[in-house]
Amino acid sequence: MNQNRTALVMGIVLIILGVLFLVGQSLDFFQFGDLWPMIIIGIGGAFFLGMILGGKSTGGLAIPGSIISMVGLILLFQEITGWWDT
Image 1: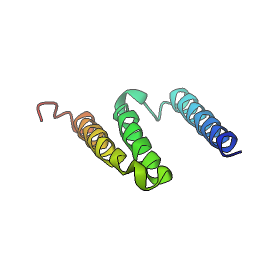
Image 2: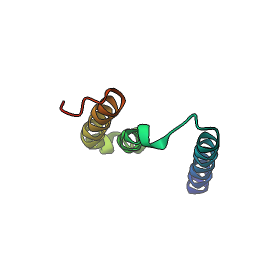
Image 3: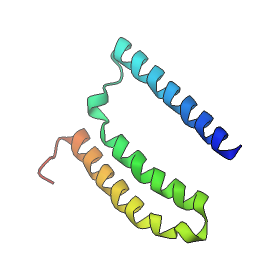
């Protein structure tokens, strides 16, 4: 039952993201090229979510989650400001 609920939530999230991207491209208010580091930040967040849901034995997921999230934040800063030499 838990796996079905997870699949349903992920499906809804993907549909919402797809609609946002479609509307954003149609109305030209959201450019995916500017926010691509959010994908990397989301992957880092997935590690943290796995750590939270997994309990005490999955505490080690905090380390790669922190590293991936920080790399994503640095890339987002560079993308927004244009300071790629940082």
